[in-house]
Amino acid sequence: MDTSRAPAASPALVAKAALRQLAIAKLEPTPENYARAYAEQLGQPLPPPQPPGLQGPELAALIERIARGLERGGRTWTTGRKKDSLHRVLASSRSDVQRLQQRLKQLVASWDSDSADDAVDTGFLDDMDPEAAAPEVPAAVPTIQLQPAAPVQPPIDEAAWDRIADTLQATVRSALPEDEPRAAELADLLAGLRRRIAREGATPEIAAQVDAVCERARRLLGHHHTLLDGLRSLCQELTSAITELAEDDSWA
Image (tube, rainbow, N blue to C red):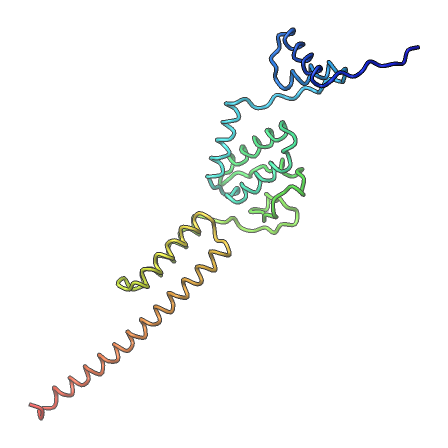
């Protein structure tokens, strides 16, 4: 019995044979077709067929829904919780295209169904890998709990926080003297920090900068109050002296 084996063909010859096979079968040289023909030339098992992914228009529509959902706040799905849940879906399903597509659709549908009266289904997030999850996020309502030990907190009204920040900034600005260059500088700094808070949120760095600017504003206001108190005392003494002088006829 002859146990000798024919020498293995070089990768270049196998590649040429695979391309010739595709040409004979009138198949396009796509990665899937080429991989199948290459495996047949080597006598290896055929690679499993890849499940069809989203087509261009469907994928574009899904991305648009995700972008719109991230820009729109909700009662249960706040902007921060939407970003965290999207991170969890991407981290836990990146190795399975079909699973990733399915969970992205479920996530966006959950965002779209968020309303003031309806409970939102987030059960599809429960079986994700906890190691791939984002930092722990407190649940907003008792019926939605992404982390088993997360404390229940009331939902954050971001619009209300924006109004509070605008009101405080406007109040401090109105208290600063308009004709004082230092006051104008402080007002511009406060306005710039307010815009940063709207873009980046209330970070520790911005909070420290707000503290520093407000401390400068307090010193400036205290200086002006001291000047006003001295001016008021001077006016009172001057008024008293004029009154005494008017009642004394000896000076005439």
